Length: 219
View (cartoon, rainbow, N blue to C red):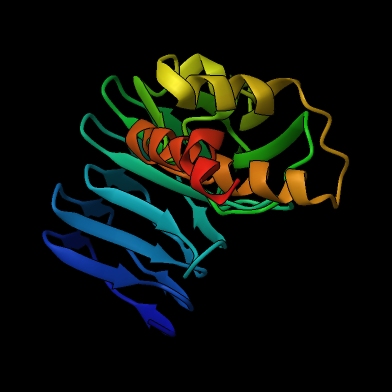
């Protein structure tokens, strides 16, 4: 959308991307099965039961009015080493029970500790997310709630040996945990790449491919 003045809005399915402005009398509802995204400004009270995905990739969606993340709603937050999606609210936010936060870090070199603001309000935040999931299992993250904002704290990284505990892959995991990896080194690049894998099975397979017994025929 660009600049639109409308009455009450109900999104029942599919996706709507607001990159301009959306305003007018009446509230807005985003039902389960529907997704709202974009970098625009929405001047309406909203009840979100579906998915809110700020930006067109990483970006900011602005709301003017009082917002509710209802039960079953999902806030998708993408982040990189420098910045993250942001929900910027001039008004209040109520996070109901059974609302979820899904975090999707991009691959990159992350400094720790590091704090992202993922929601900021002028009127205050009430409630917390019942479920928080992270697509990269080695990222140790904490959601922090203040009176007006929701922050995402990247505390550090979970050791490889915590998730990979058996066989030669576990021995490789232990080595990676204890070896020094100066910034910019080949080892640091390998470790950052491994941290970007999204499942334990992928990580275990990658570590197994690094174990030395595979290369004995080359000796």
